Amino acid sequence: MEIIAATDGSDPGTAAVRWAAREAARQRRQLRIIHAFEWESAEVRFDGGYEFVETGQQFAEAIVAAAVDEARRAAPTIRITSETLVGRPVPRLSAAADGAEILVLGNRGRGGFTSLLLGSVSRRVATHVACSVVVVRGNTDDGAGPVVVGCDDSPHSDHVLETAFEAAGARGASLTVVRAYLPPTPLWPRNVSGVETPRADERSRVQERLAPWQDKYPEVTVETIISHDGPAPALIRRSHESRLVIVGSHDHGALANAMLGSTGTQLLHHAGCPVYIARPHLEHVVG
Image (tube, rainbow, N blue to C red; front, side):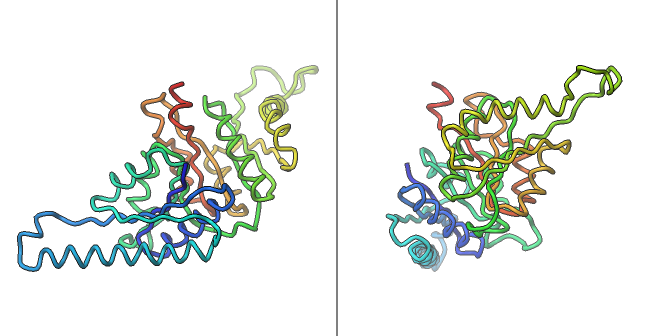
């Protein structure tokens, strides 16, 4: 499967292309660069309509050509293909990403206001596309900081952890595992002897969950953090000192597997580094 980078020629789109190219080199995959060019078919009925469409197509092809040059500079050895798509960006990008390994997007497009934290196209594609998505934002330096992953009890949490260990191992980075845990109000005094504290019990559960992945990736140094903050604040805070933060999708079964939960949505708006939304491939969901 290939890695896809979507770009509109903006600075965030160009950053996404560079990130995707480096990731394609790490995974030894092909990179496909796409740009969705939108126009209204009714425009061709007016004088100059066809010229307008032709000019727009040339502009789209120039954007893609420049993106290919950026990708080659970032990762000279990878195979690159490119494509311009005619139509509305969200459905065209979503359809193009069907079967891809990862779709990589910038956090904001050319038409967005700089004050917006996340562009509308990036938000809509990231929250509904079926494959894994990376939204490139904040610190894009691949050589600085750990990889951070959120650990929960969702059905696909093992896929998220596997993605995180692979990402850390490929980068030679350490892995920070964040478990958000809000303990219930105790029904007994805290000084009752022989009762293990809920925090220690939670850490033990996380270590048990991590054990098989640590055995598979012994080169990855792991730090486990049990946080009493909510998952989104805990991950956002650590993302500002990290190179990548990884979370899963909000799971409602195979048909709605692409929907994104509130933690992922908040990260897309506020994270200090690229956000990786790890989704299992469809055959793993329905199989």
